[in-house]
Length: 396
Image 1 (cartoon, one colour):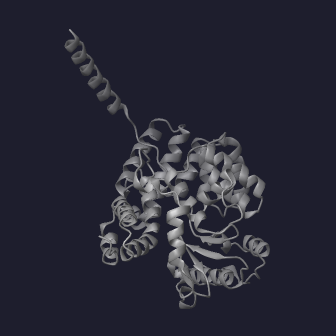
Image 2 (cartoon, rainbow, N blue to C red):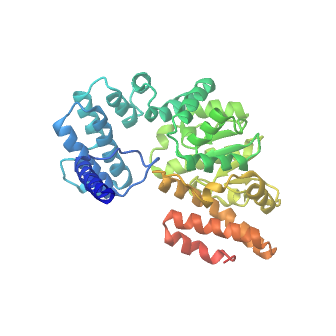
Image 3 (cartoon, rainbow, N blue to C red):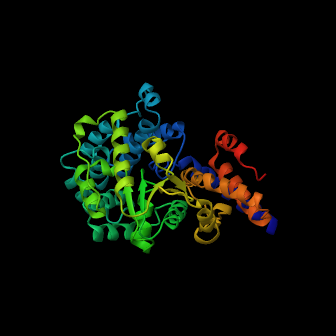
């Protein structure tokens, strides 16, 4: 009788599972900052959300995910996206206009305007409206944190980042990585960053957890804003550089300007200055800079006089860094691809340390570091990158 009951229950479970699978719609779509998927996946989701909207154009969340799917295709493979002629392929701006007509006054409609056009004269008004409508939703918190950072309202930035941390919407792996970035720096250090995932988590760790609050986190892209840069440089006692923004519109001139800004900070800051490994090398590729950059783990220190940076790297890995998450994780994380790419930042210092442990015959530490290198390279999923660095790993 027991076997019969189990068998019938199993059949019922299969039937329910089949019905559930058939009823499933498209998946939630997030920015590549949080989750990375292939182009085909975004296209499939865009098609699915378009069907949802065809049946129910008042479905506000569907507009957000339809927009995000198209924006991620447009952002990552624009040439390929532009060639598609499917009805679910729409420009981000076109989707924003459609959402305004279908669901005006909703969080999603206002938020899409904020996300789509930061140069809109009504951007600040729309941002505040979206935040009021959000009722604690995490999507808007990065925009709010940046808004208060640009205005140097540190009390409000701290409030926003505290809420963001409590939302559990920041991938744990990114917090782990950026914690170790902060541990690379002295309390009065300056760290130059470039993107979302090497900037926002640092602010959150500082504001929500009080970690290395004295460190100045300078995002190179934000420093392109004249008023903001003037405030930051004034706080740090650095003379500002003057330029006409209209002269720096194409990619080549933007790179030149970023090089000028980085050089001004490196040469004039009165505090220890570091460049995160996530910053594009073209912005500091000048030999006059490169020759004075010393790897210390997850950042490079600018130092005119040579010193034992290998000893510093060793101290960080043996005493300062939290590394268990690189060895094993028992938690599902949809952002694992994003985290895996960030974790490749460990490789330059790990290889140096691995070779050092081999030459000094420290077998236990050697094996630990070797395993970390293997875990990181396997997780990154890029075999070509591993083949490039493998000849420099003498600890196999």
